[in-house]
Length: 348
Image 1 (cartoon, rainbow, N blue to C red):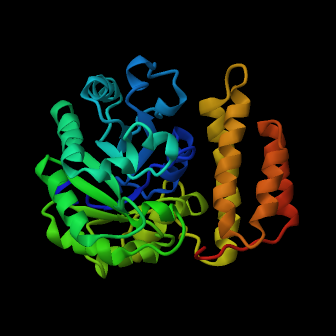
Image 2 (cartoon, rainbow, N blue to C red):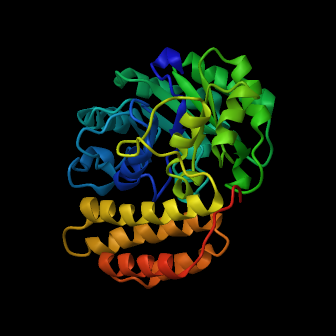
């Protein structure tokens, strides 16, 4: 990724309902100073973007001075892609990503997401459309297989078409479409594609720990590692990776500390992080009629995702569902932390 100006090739994936500005800011608060790790937005529909307002549409919000964020585009028509890119450039994104991996049925109806993997020429045309209008790097995130199987030959041909169309780099979620987020990812297949391409190829899928992130690069030859759901449980994972790389850098305000490592340390840090996330969600989404409920829904979904890494995480998620205001959620979380002994597990 150094060819693209990235010396720290670790990043947080685009995740529906999670990769909003508050979550990106939480991750950024744990990122050691000087490490410009990429953070992706949620999927953004190019059919909606041209008519949306940058400063009022929740999914388009960025923090003051936010850099190295990457909007993920969902679409296949230049009439919508062109004005979408133009509008988003006002936010100074680091790059754009094209979604060719989402398996959800409402996305597939429009020949978006993983459906684009059914036709290499068609997918390459979409890359060309975005490249024509983007002055910043363009990447593609795709699945290891469009159906139920991982097909190395097809992936080599498909990624060759994307590369020829001008894609600057590619991320492969190393599971087929039908697996969704379940089961082990096949990092071998990402390594094979990486060796066949001239552009960087990043691994995604089942990267749950700092060691996993380093393994996909050191042992499988990937150019980078994209962390998804595990980043909800470990928003400090960049801090851990930096330490494992021997980098003498720390997150702001944590200069005298080491990254949390033990099950107890990680659990304690998670609850501090969650309380911080409540503040961030309230700050970015807490104004206007009905908006508090929107923010609470985001927090509940985050808790449901992260709780899988805890021995009794279901009880924590359940208390978030009972909270009707931000203050009530803060009180319930604080009481839970004070009365419940928790520990975190490495992998789910």
